[in-house]
Every structure is written in C-alpha cells, then in structure tokens.
Length: 139
Image (cartoon, rainbow, N blue to C red; front, side):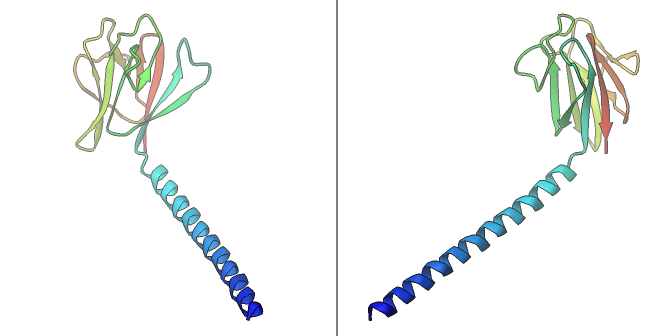
C-alpha cells in the first residue's frame, strides 16, 4: 500500500513539473508575440541628433502626443536656457504628425522656417529647439 502511495505521489509531482514547464513556455511565447507587435506599432519618433546635453543621438517614440521643454513634466526634457518650460508639442491628428510651438520665447524652427502655428511634419523634417537639433522620422 505504501509503495502504491509513493508511486502515485512521485508521478503526480512529475506531472506538476511538466505542467509548470508547459505553462512557462506558453507565457514566454505569448510575451515574445506581444513584444513583436508592440515594436511593429511604432509609427513615428524623434531622433535627438544633437544638443548641449546629448553626446550621442537618442530616439524618442511618439505615441499620440509629446511635449518638449525645460520643465520636468515634459516627455522630452531639454536642459537648455534657450528652451522654454513648455516649448513645443508634437502630436498625431488624422493620421499625420504635426509640431506646434507653445508660445515659446525663442520659437521653433522646422526645416529652417519659424513654426508660427501647427506645422505638418514629413519624414526627415529637421526641428531646431534652442541649441537642440531633432529629426522627425516616420514608418
């Protein structure tokens, strides 16, 4: 009787280990599928090409909208005296991306033109905010 109990316990424990391993593999596969679709949904981003505090280029994804400025509440914080607290906003509207100057002191340049109101962005658009150079990129 004890031999039968040990036999049942041993194989039950082994079955639990296999179930745990299959569950773990399922979760890993699900996570890999999710991360693949998440990066494929990346539609647009800003490449911070240069600036006083950037030693090398940096990419910043644009989901729906981002704000740029010196204040810590911005998505992209630029510690530059020539940048206003809330300097500009990049946002998606109707399937297109725009940049809007938020009444900054020194203005925002898009392809060497002052952005007085919302300006549509094209892939490769050069954005100058203070001493910071950004490039808009889109899939």
